[in-house]
Length: 373
Image 1 (cartoon, rainbow, N blue to C red):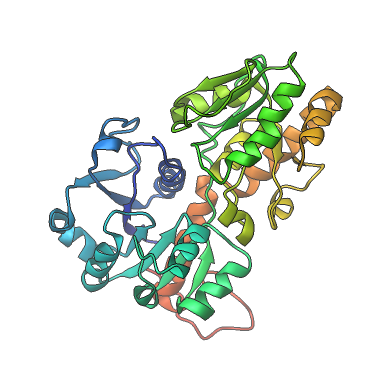
Image 2 (tube, one colour; image 1 turned 90 degrees about the vertical axis):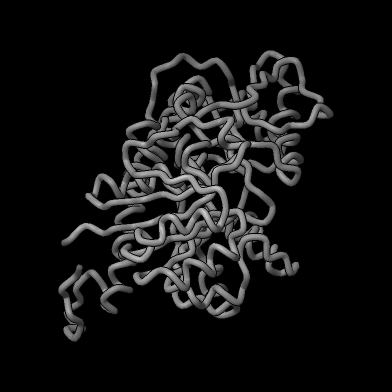
């Protein structure tokens, strides 16, 4: 089949500072490159990302930086010619950008919501910061970070023509076991979030106080000075993606903590979940619907609700069980949650919209044309 020409307009691919979008886009678009597709990524040039660019010139796509909506129009020809144009969530002036793309693009148009539960909560409050519900039906596709019942809600309540899960993914060539000796008994990697902090307090800071002989680490920016860190918790202000694998490799266990809106929606795995698993780091997670369908509790990870449960895992799990659990999670993620797997899903869905026909053949349906661009 002929490779696709794709344009993404996203929050950032050049900087992972303070956001989870960059690593998600990198894994997906590396997968698209591996499949032979051409990608142009357009990113608003803002000072906070310009000061923290850790991938200014990717080797898997072209990047265009634009100053404002008027400057974005420099890429009008590429947008018109693209087989598909994908607008991401949290793009600055996202509503105006969506209007521009909807009138300019001639191929398939899609919205990629990497923040679906947050988006829906904002829309419920009448906050149209980066998406107006009136424009949702104009997109041919709504790719959602969240799966499960939320997909039908997007179609039923917001008029999405077709909502499909497009979970984040991991680049397995960059996230893999490093062979490092463990430095920390339990780690956590994530930007500060007010609604996650009580869980961090319960599942990491509390255990650190209970287990002074153990070592802990929290990596990520924007934590307020008011946080009272125990002496056995090491703080890392910012950890660029190229250091994530070693961070996980030096952790006996790592903690997965989920935003409140995403817990409420369920089916919202974070990129950190897949990255840690690909690195062979055993995971302890908070609880939400859909998690154990992706990584079964007791086999591929452990779910914990309380300080006592964390203490029990850290002090009571046998080493053979810890390694077995990590290997199980790694196998699941490498089989189904890589950037290439996500890219295949995205491309297949786009081709179905382009042709009005499923890309996989079904004996009971022989009515579709199968010539794909």
